[in-house]
Length: 313
Ligand SMILES: Cc1cc2nc3c(=O)[nH]c(=O)nc-3n(C[C@H](O)[C@H](O)[C@H](O)COP(=O)(O)O)c2cc1C
Image (tube, rainbow, N blue to C red; front, side, top):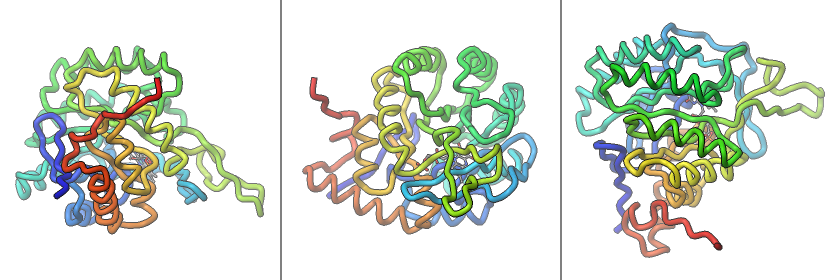
């Protein structure tokens, strides 16, 4: 009998699967529907200090092997999501829910963290330091001194379970440098990774970009992202303190994709593009596919293969 139980810090979950922030999680109604699936838990849309309408449309499109988006962080504001997670934890004390938050600049993280610290929410917060889609705002986690400044400030008063959502990195020295920063703070988890910033897709009929914001540049997710997500999860698992759990995100469309992220070291796996395209039934399908993959290998629990990737050297 296969068991998909996993842990992040002191939190336990019956299934390794959950949604990725930004996909089918904007409103309380969306979040309630996610909570009714077989997913281990759910995460909110990234909340910013004020509600935002986001970028002009068309701002997201499906591609042959994934998606491109430049949503620009449309959301109902941090107060809305704090209210939702506070009520959720009262109703479901056995199902820890994740709160995702994002700042438009470094100072926003101070404001957001103060609000969460003052709230009744005791679950994990994912601080998104990697949104590629707000015009004129860089992805913070590509800037090491600014990342340090935010974390120094935050952990001077923030005592609740916290994680960071990272962008993809590409050079091995980038993993060394960022892991050295992350290892200095009492993080419960990281989430690797956000969409691959600033790709482009073109409509061949009209020679025009598929999305409107930022002259057509947008974040890439889905199958295109899988090898990069595997490398990012693996690279951080080899470098981070073992107490810092990793949520693997990027490129999942099958149970084998989930398995591969766990093999690279993920403790939980989030679904973005595939959840947007296929809908909520994807959690059941991938639960069955992952269970079948594990059964085929004779595994009964996640710990049987988590982080046990083999290499040829
Ligand atoms: C339409 C859309 C909106 C997104 N919004 C957010 C967001 O608000 N916060 C965030 O951390 N990531 C956001 N993401 C990134 C996803 O959470 C995920 O990291 C990325 O899409 C890679 O996963 P995938 O390959 O499964 O799509 C968004 C992605 C998409 C497609």
